[in-house]
Image (cartoon, rainbow over all chains, first blue to last red; front, side, top):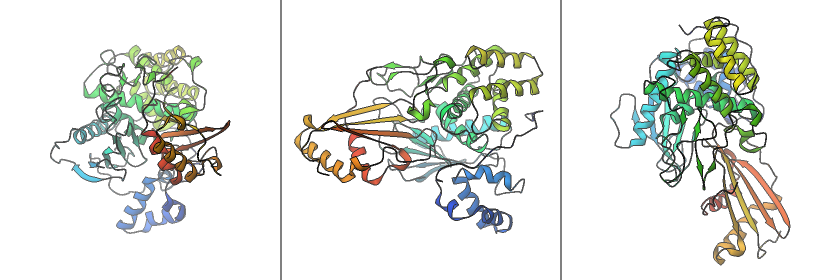
Length: 360
Length: 108
């Protein structure tokens, strides 16, 4: 049911500029990688696939090798959780795997449950076979670093810090943070949005949107019942704020002497144009975030069903790595028309939303 | 370069990360306890700070931190920017020490 009428998958550019993260991929030329995948034994293939998965080259090569059957594609949820024990070596010690017993460590269970809820949203609603659409195992590492105030997707797995306890609690505490990090993985395998400027803010926004949808679906909430917050519960007690970001009201999530004030704009005319944060990827994401919120509220019901689907198909099939806000607006409007009809309620809601935030 | 003994102000600004909330810490060697001031001067010298490039190239990754360390000494100023995934080994002790300093409230 998710198959879109919009079949014209555009050719995308995969070649990343700048240095690669993965030294093995620099040593192995692409033709050799292809050869090993096509002709190597199971062990070799697994090794090469793992190597490629570690680099963003994987996305490009995946299209080169076409629909060759690869490694495990079971269509089954496979989760593992590791404990870095305050170190920075990844992945750390294995503490829980799929079907394993509940841990006494709350962060372990949150990482396990949150990655499961994210897998379920993408699988059950969007018919996606895990993050790479090929059954990738979901690896998470908790207790990374000392008082580490961050969570990230490193191209291969999720990583969560414990927070410093004074400003931030542990980063697994909010299920939308987990959904956010995993969605960075989906973006990496699909549009590959360059993490800088408007494409970077779109990358952030897709992560927030699907992160929020994971939370909404886990609570069975309609658009008007949801809080539309990112990182609810993450701010330590004593910090003046409710969350890190709000899709409903960008710029209102916190206002605190230590953290400053939520800098997110909702309007394109108020966008940040300075050099910090990769050109404000965590700031300007407020604009497309709010557009999604407005469209979802206009259509009503469960936000993942229609507007979520439009955003997902756009990410999967249409956007290029250097997409702009305007490009994303045009693409979502076009996809809305393809799926639900031209000038239908859905397409009108999407168009009006982008107009309201001043992108079109 | 001899930099021991002369007072310096050092600022580290961390941006990015999942929270997107910037964090700034500033120290003035003149107001530090003597042992700490000596340590700071030693770390600066070990990093050969004033000879480092203003940007150390790194590949942007979602939700990772970026750091900017700026030093002012006798009217001379130098800043170095780098990513969490590519912290130069010579700067690690200085960065860790700066990040362990108390944070100041944000003045908008």
